[in-house]
Length: 256
Image 1: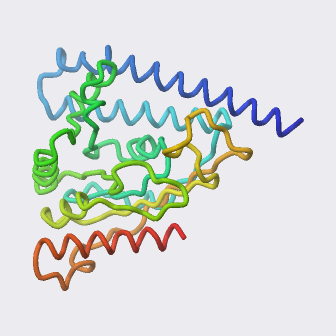
Image 2 (image 1 turned 135 degrees about the vertical axis):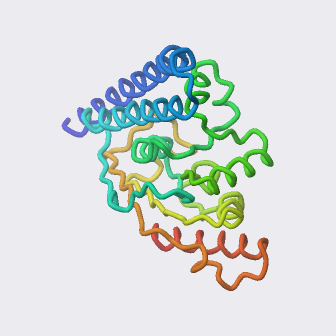
Image 3 (image 1 turned 60 degrees about the horizontal axis):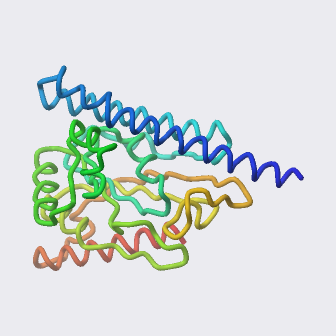
């Protein structure tokens, strides 16, 4: 009976938390953040306020899920967060809420959003003021990412491009490695683990509840120098392939 009650409570808590997430997201995207275009003329200040607001909202959502005992989490390596720019935050992507964790930790990072989000009537009002990068055009996405890094920004990327399929090997696309090489950017790896495989994963609905409460680990690793990873590369193409292979090996070892 205790296990059954625990399951029912976490199912209720999940429904409640995702309802709050949708409601707050709609409120920010359709009312609060669009007003920044009216009251804040300076783009840099508008972007900073919008990203801070989004980060706080996502941080509240993470706290709410923990408070409702839907899940638990721990974060290690906060001391490795640095205001230094020209850095790519790279993370594996096991669950639906990975970006929620990362944007609550790194609210000022440039985030890549899908075309569907950019043109979603409930969310585009938040994406615009925050000045996130759209990936609807590959060439523009790559050039925009590289230019922002060279200008001192911090970029957040999931090299897999989509959520990991549990039990399948990591499949990193070349985009993140190509951007890092061309921008000569430092890499800050973030390893994300979950005790309940499949929770909020690619082929599981958000309302799927495992028998035990999931515990997430967000492990911010020491930064990696690009020169240390691809020092023997003879061309940009060679460096991109070597870096991608090195990242796959790195995450495979840490997730084993």
